Length: 403
Length: 199
Image: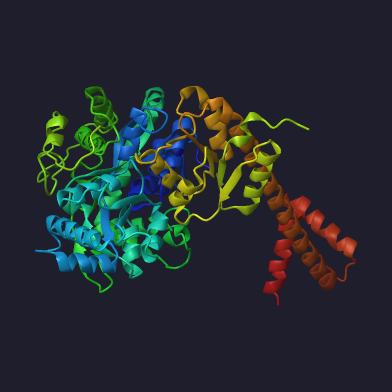
C-alpha cells in the first residue's frame, strides 16, 4: 500500500463522480501524497451524514446538499466547504413513451424547445384534470437536489405548479428505471447514466438535456467540513490539484475509452450491479462514453441528440466553483418554500464554494469563459439571474411557494 | 406483574429488507417493553406505507437507498405530523456517530421528547452491532468450513498420489505450510490446482 495521508471519500455511482474515480485510479491523488479510499454509497442522506460525523473526510456532494447542510435545513447544521467543482450540467429529463406521445400530440411547435414541451405538459395536466385522471408523477433524487429544482424550473415556466398540478417524489437513482417501467412515475430528472439506461431498456425517452433548460448549472461539488478544511488546508490544496489533473485527463477525448473503462469497473459505476433488479442489462462502458461525448441515444428508435455542454468536467471553468451558482440554488430553495429569504442565508450559501482555495492551489490557471452565459445560468425562460437581488428575481416569477 | 414502561404507546416503525435483522430488532424492542412495533420490508410506495402507519419513530438501516425517500417527509407541508431526522441537535453528536457506525438511522416525529427516543436508538444501535457480529461469525464459520473441505480434498489427493496414510498426508500439508509461511488451506488449494493441471 502506498504511504501518504489516508483519506476516505464517499461517492454515489453517477458519471459525475468521474474526477473522483480517475484521480484515484490513475494515481493523481497518490502523486500528491494522498492515500484515498473511495467508498461507494447508496444515498445522499448517507453521504451527508457520514461526511458530517467524520466517517468521510471528503465527499461527492450534490450542490444543494452542501448548502442545506451549511444552513442546517432539515438536518443538523454542519458548515461545508467546496473548493472544487466535480461537474457542471449532466442531468436530463426522461419521460415514459406514453407521456412522450401525449406531449408530442399537445405540442404547438418543436418539442425540443423546452417552452413548447412545458406548455404541452400544462395541456396534458389540464386534460387529465378534466378527465379526473391521476396526477402525473415525476421522480427526482433528493428534496435538496438540482434534479428537483431543474424539473420545477422547467414545468413552472410552462404554467405547471410542481406542488399542485403534479406529484414530485424522491427516488434513489437505481430505482428510477424500474419505477418508470412499472408506471410508478411518468418521468424523472436524474444524472448519467440512468437516462441512457432507461432509453436502452426501451422504457423511456430523453425529453431534454437539462443544459437546454439551464445552459450552466453546477451539479456536484467536492465537499469537506469547514472545520476540516481549516485544519487540513495543505491536504485540501493537494486534493484540488489531483482532481484538476483528473478533470483534464477526462476532458481529453483521446482518453474517453480508458475513462469509461475505469468508471465501469467493479465497485465504481458498474450499473448492472447497482440496478434495483440486477443483471437486467449489461451496461457497458459504451453508455458512459455517450455521457462523456455528449452524444446520447434519446429514444429506442435510435435517435441521437448531442450537445457540447452535456456534462462538463473541468472545461469552460467547470471545476472552479462559482458562488453565483450557489446563490441560484439558494434562490430555488426560497422559491419552493424550503428556506426563508435572508441576506445572511444568502451569504452563507455563497460561502460554501471557495474559489480562493481553488485559485491558490492552481496558481495562474487560465480559464476560457468565452460564450458562457452572462448571468452564469442562461435559463431558457424567465428573468436573468441576479445574485445580488434575489427578492427582485423571485418577484418576477409567478409560480412559487415563498415563506 | 411488571409495570409497562411509559413508552409502550409509542408506535415504532422498522424499515428493513433483511428479515433476520428485522426479527432481531423487533424482538429487542418488544422485550424492552415497546409493544407497538410495526415493520415495512417492501420498498414499493414507501411513503404511502409510512403515512398509513403514521409512526412516532422510524428506524431504517443505512444501507437502504430508500433513506432519501424518507427525507422527503420533511418537505411535505400538508402532512400534519412532520418527522425529523435523528436529532437536529449538535449535543447528540455521540449518539449520531454511534448510530452511523452501527448502520442505523432514525427519524422521529417533531415534538417528541428526545429522551424518550434515545433509549430506543441506543437499543437499536446495540442490536445492529450484535447483528453485525453474528454475521461476521457466520462468515467466519462458513469460510472455516470451506477450508476444511479444501484440506480434505488435498489430503485425499496426496494419499492417493503418494500412497500416504491420512495422518501423514495432513502432516505433509502442515509442514509445507510452515516452511513456506502460508496457511494450510492455501497449500491445500495449490495441491488441488496442481492435480487438476496434471490430470
